[in-house]
Image (cartoon, rainbow, N blue to C red; front, side, top):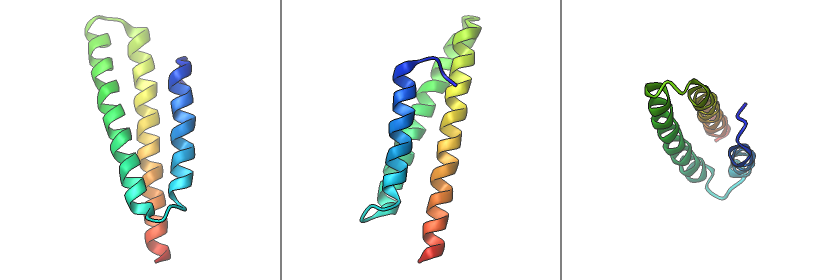
Length: 89
């Protein structure tokens, strides 16, 4: 996991938002909103990784990889929830 306390707090808040989205009035719209946020974060982290790697700052690059993996897990979780909700309809 990341050593960045602000990032870790953001992870926790994002997970809570995903759990809440499942029970929202329009869960698909809420999950789509969260998906867009995560995709944007992932793009930012990919840029951070590229810069760190080019500068041979491998500690920062490693942290970026961990953050990208988290984003991928969240994206997968959002898709699973959407599929489950869709199956329930």
